[in-house]
Image (cartoon, rainbow, N blue to C red; front, side, top):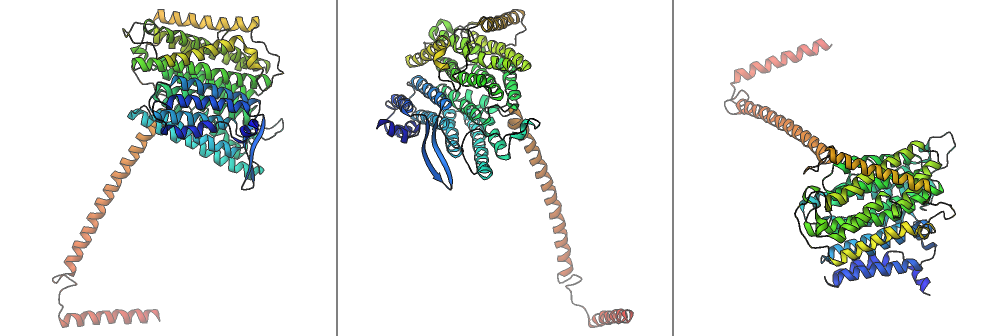
Length: 581
């Protein structure tokens, strides 16, 4: 009976409906109520069996509102876990609008991860975009408002592309099923031959949300502008929903390997020179997504296992890092590296939790990042992708530089900024402790996670001598490089500056070009109007002179003059008549 009720209710629906009721319970009750909704939704999700549920017919198409399998089970669970941790982290927030937006956003992401058709996915896809933007606007600054508007435009554009692709897909195949979207090709065909116009649009939609290169700037633009708690929610859902969608629709699409490699490398440079530590984490997030995209592109059983495992672990340790920086922002009022340092003296617990998150993202053995990232690197080696393997190793060392060392070092150590503040609120510490617990627990009890992966038959052991020694060599050499660069003064100084990324094109260059074009058009229009008015004025003046009572055509003519002109006209007419004959 209970299971029948659970099947009839889509995953995340408890959170979405409950979020709309939060404004009616008051400021004090809303934070614990948001946490309760996340817990109840998690219990409900665990009761739903695998398979398709809630099938309906819509305009001749069959929609599967809920589809649960091994992939959606993992993503749905970790999304719930992230929602619970983030809700605990936000218990001190009295702004009900943030709780409404956050829980609605999380519920929509969970629903999307369990959608069985493209139309249902689209509905949840757009709901995540519309609800999450309020977490950016909740900061209340003009900068956050402009960033939120850009974020909303880009996310809605992704949804429009997804809807268009879904419609074309239905026209092409007569089905809206959300599964493998690639077309079978022969061995001699290009990899892009597996894409139809519909799947091209869907891939671009997924790529926008996954922050592909040149489509990534919305991430670094919006996440650092959100509230301290809002950024934690944002880091967990949007991009990982895109990763889930790519796994579902484009596993084994080889061009994703090159895209993923680019994603792992280019954020390293920006992260190293960035002063705002939350922007550093945003670039780091982009870097980690690259590992997942590479795994999707390889498409082997080990690679997909590694991608799912890395997404699971990444949600937790990235949330932990954003929580630690959110705690710093909450107490100090800034996350600029130039204004921080020495905070370990007054925020020791936050420092410890941040170091655990930094070590996890760097891939230290016995922590979660090691047991997931190593699977993707091993998959590249097994697939004989030598240069991909090299790039992933370089990217792993880069992660150590910008997230493993830079974040905790400049926030809590480095130079002493002299700031002495209170430790983070208790609820923040509890949430960070949960994140740290899972970072350590997953690194030690990794078989528990491996059993959930889509291909459990894969016999993979992360703690081999080769894996451990290789990873420790990378980490130690990265740490040594950081020390040498710092001691020699070659490490980029932390400066109060704005680093230019490709978003400069549409935030600065295009507006300037459009402004210049507008100025030219306005100037030309002004000149033409002025000249036209002068010509019209001259014509009217001459007409007035010639047609008034003293003008050539307006004055009274004598009878003799009229007789002369009449005779002349008659003569001309007769001449023309005879010439025609």
